[in-house]
Length: 480
Image 1 (tube, rainbow, N blue to C red):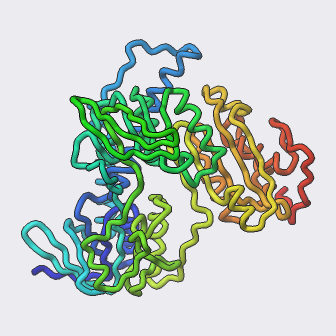
Image 2: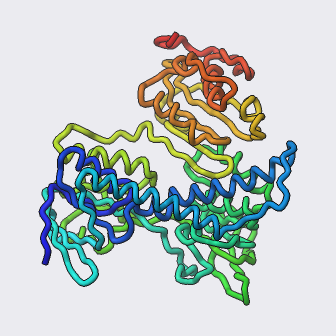
Image 3: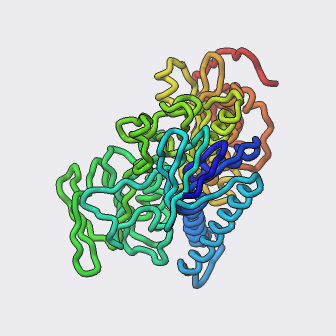
């Protein structure tokens, strides 16, 4: 049996794992990075990256068709998903090769195989035809999470797919049923709708995109319905029958049982942690009732030399959360004083239009005892938005009435995923409304709408009406 001695072993080569490994290598540690699949994990191979390629492709197709309304006519426009898949896979390959090169550059050793703890310091790695034993003072678990299986809808059938299979489709489903109205379901569902699928969404809760400000969600739901989507809320998909080339799916809805006929079913009802077979129970690593590993503010588990980062330690399921956790854990292992802070954690939903948020919502801010002012700048008032043919959207700011401290920024509209970092930086720095309102933004751009929304909270907006009867209290300071 081969034996490897390292300073740290990282199990899982996804966003959290490879970042932890690279940062440890930068800090002079000898690292073993183990994964039973591909470097880059779900995000790079089957999630974030290929899904954004699909979404960009679909949105570009939709924008070209929409451009006919202002004089851009494209005759013979068609979709070749087989050719697209070649391009998408090349993008993924370039990025995974890049990660491998970065790992090698800091002498991270990459091993393919399935890892299992034999003790807090010893890990057995099963490979084809052999076993490798690795030992290290520290271990980082970064094994991620996988799509949750839904009873009655077995995933071994080719017409029932998860997001992973959806991203590899080389055809456009004529009628697509998405079970789950969350981020993954709506991102992919809206993309295939853009490409020509008739979309049906079934969501168990009373709203789409639970956890996102309902005011923003309306801007996503409205165009879905306008393009012909059927949306069933407070509803459940209970069973299906295959008849010839069609699937008859039985739904339980508030109006009673309903049958819909589709060709493909995308199951997107959540994820479960990839912890099976790791041997955590024998070591005493604690998990929560849903099976996610519990950690402290340094991502340390109940076993002091074992850390858990990324999706395996629970929501939010964001690659950039895993990135940050990977960096922090690496620095903790190297002896630096570091801890995790999620207060200014941005998130983006790549629907059409996009949603991007950071900080507190109205409800959350009030729940924490803040008296707030809410600024709103509609995309219909944005010169840049109108010149792009994009008039649907909203820029919404949450400000503490007494201190004028920035508490939250919530955006829906074109390319808002590229704008949200301004809000994240403002919250991270403890900025006030005056700091952003007084910062000159270029014109015409989408970002100046953020400036105007903050100006509105101060009663100083120029390009939209100010809030009636607004008398904001004097701030503790003024930026300019």
